[in-house]
Length: 205
Image (cartoon, rainbow, N blue to C red; front, side):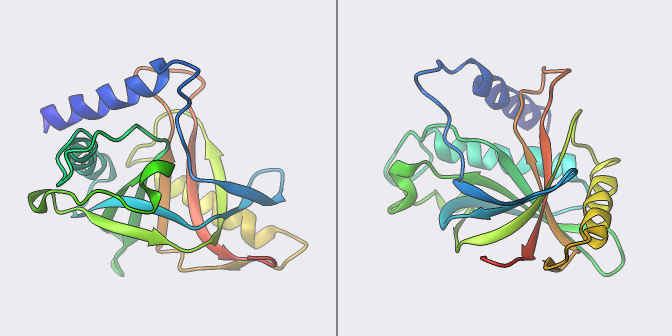
């Protein structure tokens, strides 16, 4: 597990030192609603590679899942393709009925070059292609490090903001399923950006 932790740290460090003429790709979206403490984004159709896991820890599952994705983007695929890094790394979380986090998917957005025909990962990596239809996502930004002891609090704050939005029109999806997006290198101690995502219904979506 120490090895996978080091790999994740290396990857996130590389996100910050890529030259400016090699901008890191991110999933494309438009902002459908901008409120004081959240926004709703309409994401376009997109293709991701996902590492499914069963576990009880957001942090450990993210490290383990990214270790598998790291191998895939560095040639562990049937085409031996090297795949450019993208951002953010998104960990989807499905909460069990007992209230514990039991299922995770660590997700890597495939760059435009591979959106239509991604390389097939080695079977032993247990990665799944995730072709996402356009969707609306409610987003709350938060700083610091995303950890097991703060992600549920951020999710609850997002739900509270959606519930109190006076203009209405927002229909929450299953609040037991949400995602944490991480954008920064692990060594960045200030100015960090994370987001909690929740799928919602909204006019125009």
